[in-house]
Length: 233
Ligand code: OAD
Image 1: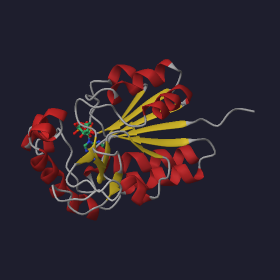
Image 2: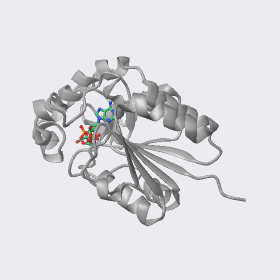
Image 3: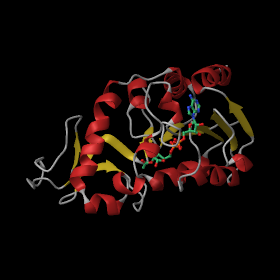
């Protein structure tokens, strides 16, 4: 009997764009209005933690109220109905996959609704502001929280799991990511090396085109649902 394919789904900011959340590298994107080194680097946080915490506090309300779109929802349906394994590896710090109902979600770049106590490692889950007054409920240290977002200069989260899933994936699907930030940008190469069929859903063909077997261009809310319906037969 043929094995049911295991599916590895890599998502980026483009999947949440139609839920109203800004991507990073578009003309009006986050990184055109802010310096990455100020708000998303280890050095930037060491220099001015209050500024960095305020930046992420400022993003929280709109992320919290955003709703999943048709692309998030059809991935949740896929996970529910597919007989093989479906895992979503997301670079997004929003929680729209969870809101859509997906369970196997790995936030390799962290989550905006979490803060990490640098004194004891406790992860606080909150949509409230985190600032210099925030008390760690675990070690009682005040004001030593960092947004639980992976900054440039830090390791990605869940890499053991990701590497295992890349080795066993039969189908690799990339959705709404520019493919310029490593190591996530290199996942397609690894998956292909281990034998997965590789597909890209994006508004445009990205610079990673070499490693994709097929590109499906267009808005993912329009291109993904019919593809998932067909996959589910
Ligand atoms: P980018 O802003 O770099 O890329 C977004 C991609 O989504 C682009 O390739 C767009 O063409 C595509 N896109 C936009 N709208 C789309 C739509 N409706 N349907 C399909 N595709 C669409 O965002 P990421 O690739 O996610 O890291 O960026 C990777 C990382 O860079 C982020 O996780 C972030 C940033 O530094 C951290 O903050 C740690």
